[in-house]
Image (cartoon, rainbow over all chains, first blue to last red; front, side):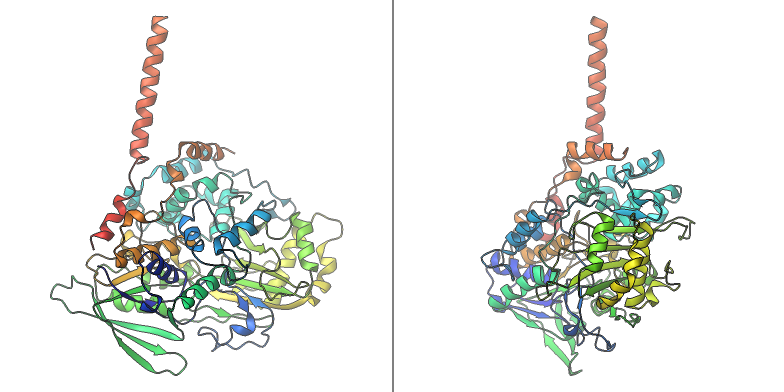
Length: 564
Length: 42
C-alpha cells in the first residue's frame, strides 16, 4: 500500500537504508520520515569509550576506565554479493573523505589494502596451518553437496534443523579446517540453523572457493560507524529527516478486525529513556511503520581493563516490542526462537587499545602479515567441545590502523572474540565471560606464545605489552548470533507480512528471499524492499541479485575445492 | 566405427539429460522475481 510518510522504529542500517530509498527512489521529502530509536548506530557502532558510557545499555554499568575505543563487532564486506549495500553507499557522500561517495571511499581504501589472509588458522606446536586443505572426508562432502544442491523452494526441509543435527552422523565435519574457518568467519555455532547454513553456502559459494585467504573480503576505511552509519546520518539529516533518540518503543496499537486478518498500526507507545516519560503517538492513514524487529547488540554490556562485562538479562528492546506485537497476530513470527535461548547465541568480544605498536608488531611477526589483512583463529591443542573435539579458542582481527579517525598515530586498536564464552580460558582459568580486559589480553598473549615460531618468544615482551595498554573493553552480547538461531521459515515475519496495510519489518530477523543474514547486505535489502513497497515502486526495480550458486563455473570450482 | 559413434551419442545424450535434470532440480534457471511479487500484491 502506498504511503506518504514513515515512522522508523530503530535507527540502524536497515531503516536508514529504507529512508534513503524512499527519498531518492520514492521522491519523498526527508521530513516525511521520523526515526525513533535508542541510538543512531544499531549494531554498527564504533566510538571512543567515553562517548558510549551514557548510551542506553551502558549507563547502568559504569566503567572505571573509559579510555580507548570500542567497537562491539566488525564488518567484513563482499562487493561481489553485497550489491544492495554498495548501491546504497554509492548514493551518499563519505563522512571522512571529501568528494567521494561512501562507496568510492571503501573501494579506494580496499584497492590499496587488499585482503590476503596468510594465517587464518594457528595451532600450538604447529604454528600457521595449511587452511587451504579443508579436511573433508566423503561423508562431509556428501552432506555439503546436499546443502548446495537444495534449491530455494525446498529450504523448508531444514525447518528446525540445527547444524549439529544436520551433521549428527558426521561429527568429523566439526574437526575440519573448513568448519574452524566457517564458524569463526561468520560466527556460526553448532546450535545455529542449518537452514541459514544452506543460505550461506549458496550466497557465499564463490567465497567458499577461496575461504582460507579471505580474498573476497573487502573492508571499509574506518570502523563501521564512521564509514557506514555516519554517512547515512549526515545525508538523512541534510534531507530533513527527524532522528529522535533515547526512545524505547514498547507497544503498537492495531486496528481491531473481526478475523484478525488485517494488520494496520494505529498508534505507538514509547518511553523517553532520558526522562522516563511515556509518550503515545497516533499513526494516521498516510503513515507507514517500518520496524527493525531485533538487534544482535540489544542487552549488550561493556567491561573494562579491570572489570568483566556483566550480564544483562533484558529480553531486548526491539525483540521485546516484536514479542508484544507478534502475540496479536498469527504471522508475525516467533521472537522466542531467537531471544529466549542465549546459550545458542551469546558471545563476547573485546576491543584493545594500546599506546604503541609493540603488540601489533609481534602479531605481524608471528602471523607474517601486515595489519588489515586478516582474521586469525587460534585452535585448541586439546579437546574442548561436548563431542570431545578440538575447537577454536579465540579469534582476532587486526585492523588497518588507524581504525578510528581520532586515533593517534602511535595507538593500536585490535578486536577479538570468543565464540563460546562459557568455555574456560587456556591461560586464565575462568570462563571468558568472567574475564576482565586484562585477562582477555593475557589469553591472547598466551595463544600467540603457543604459535610463535621465533626463538625469542612474545612472552619476553609480555611486560612491555601489558604496559602499553590504554584499555581493553570486554563486551558481552547475549544475542550476538541470535539471528542464526535454529528456526523454521515461519519464525521470522516477512518484510511485508500478508494482510499488512502499513507495517513492514526490516533487519536481520525478517524473512526475505534468498538473503543470508548477519550482513550489511541483507539489512539494506530489507529496508529497500520496505521502501519500494510503500513508495509504490515495482519490485522488479530492486537491485539485481547475483546468483553465483547458479553459475556453472563457480559450482565446479566449489566441487574442486571440496577435494582440496 | 558405427558402434563407437552410437555409443558416443548415447553417452552424450545421457550426460546431457542428467545435467539438465540436475539443473532443473537445483532450479538453476528459476526466475527470482517471482519471489518478490507477493510483496507487490500486499
